[in-house]
Amino acid sequence: MRIIIRCDIGGPHGMGHAVRMRALARALAAQGVDVVFQTSTPMLASFVTPFSCIDLPGYFPSNIDVLIIDTKAYISEAWFYEWRSLRQCKVVRIDHPHAEPGTCDLLVAPVAHWHHAVVQRLLEGFGERFLYGWDYVMLNEEVTRREPIPYEMREDNIILCAGGSDPDNILQKMWDWTVEADILPGIPLGFCYGKYVPPERQPKKSTVPHRYVVPFETRGLAHAKMTVGLFGVTPYECLWYKTPMLMMAHTEENCEGAWNLALASNWACRWLGPIQAMNAKHFKMTLESFWFESYRVEMNRATHNLLDGRGIERIADAILAL
Image (tube, rainbow, N blue to C red; front, top):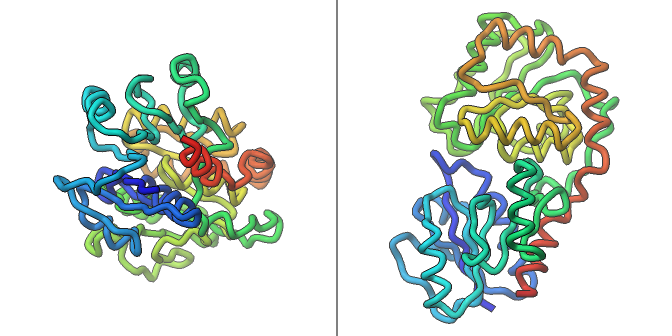
């Protein structure tokens, strides 16, 4: 079987799509599938090694059995209809809430934060061809192979992060706010920059006590008493590690998603509002209020039984069954 995965990375695309598609590719390859990536962002090639990766515009290898699409890049519904009429292969769309039933054979929503009206519409249109919810959340195997650390065994610390590419320089804003407002003096604050954040946008190494700047690693989330960052993949990783997370967002779509995830997770992740409405004073008051142990313990308990880490396995099985 040969599968093409259309995916992009970095800048406005972020890291999440590429992370989960690489994990899905590994799961499919483990079952003997020939997987090839196609992208409009050449940097994806090194990220998905050893899988082959071809650039757009480019050719499609012959004898494709399944085309998987997981990208923020605009692709019209008409393109999907045309592709299905001309190609003898199955189409799987990932994370496309506006998909029409005739455009794909399987629609996967590897999340739990879509609006209930959207979920209901897609269930009515796709039926069993629509996979949604906690059972299908796609977590990287590098995350799920590390079990959550009991909350009472963790040392006091807060991780602050802003995604793999941080195009809006949010991590620097959080750094500035903590310095300006002297937030939680004595509590270690770790500012973790993503792999594709250029050096000029990384917070500088600092001599400010109890503040440190390091590359982002998911294991940091496992050890944290609390995480502060943007809506995206990180909140789901925190839910796996049972780590309380405070979420912000910088787009209207992500604001809605963060609010819906807060509701779906029983407030294990808390929604702080749009980043544009935040300032140093508000940031200080928010972090210090949620640092009270009773809030964090309550958030930790709310994470229990949400995720079992088998989402990618279930999705791979569904694709192979097409």
